[in-house]
Each structure stands twice: as C-alpha cells, then as structure tokens.
Length: 478
Image (cartoon, rainbow, N blue to C red; front, top):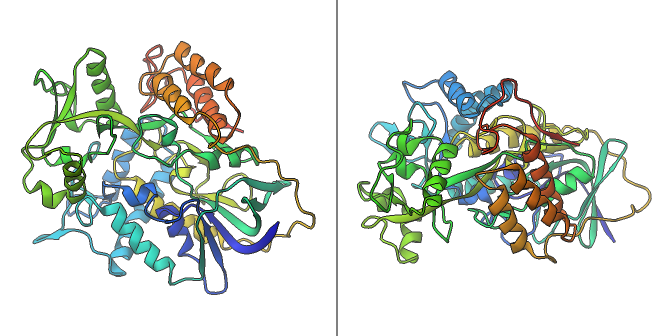
C-alpha cells in the first residue's frame, strides 16, 4: 500500500477546511482530502444561501450578537466558545474585507439583512443568496497560493491512533502519515430522507469515534422550515426577513400568534409547520411582496424557474427538512479533540458554540473562525513518529452497499422533528437489523442520544417530554 507523509492533513474541502489550510506557513505542507471530483462545489458551505452574521452595524455590538446566540442556544451554549465566535468573527470579517472580498453594499455601506433570532440587522451577503459560493471560492483562491495539496476522490476509510495519538489515515489504496489531522468533513443531515444536503452522511464521525475520539450532542439536528416540498431545495430565511410569510391552504397566517411570527426561530417554525401538516393542511411561503426578488435572490429565482415555479407570482409549497448538524466531534476552544494531535472544525465539530439550536448565519462564521483556530494549532504540532509496521486495517464498511434510502426513511419518520420514546426505539430496532457500517453506526448513536435526552430543548423536541430540565448537560459519546 502506498505511503505518504504531510505536516497536516485536512479531511474536507468546505469553508472550515479551507480556513484551516490557508494557515499553512511556508516551511510546512498540508494535504486536503475529499471524496468528490470537484472539491468546493459539493460542500455545504459552498451551497449556503444565507449570509454571515457579524456585528458591524452602527447600532449593533458584539455583546448583542453574543446574547442572541446564547438565547437561541436554549441554555446549552458554551459561553466561552460563543465569545470567541463573535469577537474573532468580527476580526475575520474585517480581514476578509482588507484582503479584497466584497460584500453586497449600497449607498450607506455594507447591506445588513435580518434573520430569525437576531435582534439587529447583521447578516452580510455577497452576490445576493450566493454568499457561501463567493466566500468559499475566495478562500479556495487563497489556499491555492499556499503549499497545499488537494486530493480529490479519496474516501476516508480509517483513522489509526496509538496510545492517544493519531498516527495515520487510510484510504482505499494508500496510508497517509501526519503530524496533525483536522476533521472538516461536514455534518450528517443526509441520514434523513428529507434533507437540504445530499452528501453529508457523517461517516467521518463514525471513523473518529472508532479511533477513540469523543462525539457530542448528536441529538441536535437543526431542521430548516422552508424547503420546496418533495425537492427540499432551501428557500433562505432571508426571504422572510425581506417580507415573505407562511400561510396554509386556508390562507391562514398560522404563525401570526407565535412570538416572532414567520421569523420565529427555526425549531419553532418547523414544529408549527409539522403541526399544520399533521392536521391535513398544506403550507406555503408567500414571497410575492418582496421587491426586486430576482436581484436579491438570483440563485433561488433561477432554481425555482428551473423547477417551473414562479416564486414572484405564486405561493410555493414548503416543508421542513434536515439542514444542519449541531452535534459532532467534541472539541475544546483550541479546536482539539481528545486525541492530542487531532482537531476538528465547522459542521463536523461540536464546541458547544451553537448550544441546542444554531442562530441563523452563525455557521459560515464558525467555519471561518474555528477553521482558522484548528489550522494554526494543528500546524504547531511537533514531529509525529511514523508507524514502523504497516497497521492492521479493519475499517467499518462504508455506506454504499446497503439500503441507504430505508435508513433515511427510518430517520425521518421516527427521529425527525417530533420525537417519542417508542418511535425512537422502533427506529433503533430496525437499524440494528441492518448491515453495520459507518452510516448505521452513527444513526444508532444519534438515536441513543435522543432517547437519553428526556426533555425538549432547542431543536430536540420530545412529545413525551415537553418540559425543559433546569440543569442541562451535553451528551458525550466515548
């Protein structure tokens, strides 16, 4: 089997991985591995329609951004992580602008949008609803100016650790040794049949756990309320910030009596929508009052037109879908896992920064901030002793040779927005009958965490435990 060595290895090609990679100094070499042919276009960060939350407005402040994040996090945020996010985030945004990145601007400077959970207009966008594409592309350009090697079509099979230290990663036909490793491999939303992501199965989480790395808060999967029914193309929350609203097929504004109305937090809107659907109602997003919709939302306008929909003229039927994985690989404030030379960042990680429910548009900011922290610290790691003997390779099988769609239906039907003990146990029982692989292994851990959290908090909603306990704890899987 072919062997290679790099100072730092990054698993993942999205914004968090690129943010880590560009920290590579001249005397170091970094390798970025990803399973697809095109490394940025399939990443969740590249597809992100929403913007980046940052307190740069004259009437805004870092403290306000901090408090909004804490409030939406429903009592489970790591406050120190949130402080890093909002403080370093503002520094990173200013750094981006100094490097020449352009956010959408008007006569009064950078335009700031409003999304659910924010007390101020603080959402920065680039090229309308193409912010993720623009920012990820900009970071890719920066990465190509560094000593960084990109390896497409490399699917991770195993992480080898010895005595609490990561040693090497295994792909189909090669072993890569390293001084440090960064997981920036995304979330696990694609384990659900209704999802805005198509390639996020969280297999790296299973690989990490099997190597002795702790996972945290897997039960917290955030569902986005407004995706096109049966297609699950995401209709950005910014549409509602610009004046769109939700109605049912009786033309009732069913969010009217809910605090925040159509701009309530995603967990609240998703639950209300599911309640409507369970009553036999259809749910629609009315965007007809948005001025200059085509110019403000070029990506959404183009996609809806492609689907034969006239979003500026007609109601669009919508439904919730799995969107963002709050749980993941447990990290500290330095982006370190419990393996001393292994790090994680972005949606693959869990620092507690999002608590039990992510504040809208904090995800791209997190990728930039904690990706950078992971890169800086990982590239400081000392020389790692290379394994003298070729290790025994025994990876869990990947998720390609089993009934994936059956697993996804189980996860959506029994482990989705409304959860209950007997339904969670039914899903777990069915999954245990399936062939064991990275996907089924992680699905079991998600359900275990959901069963153990006997309360409703943030985006974890238990119909049999509606109350929220006073002293919350994180769910740690070892």
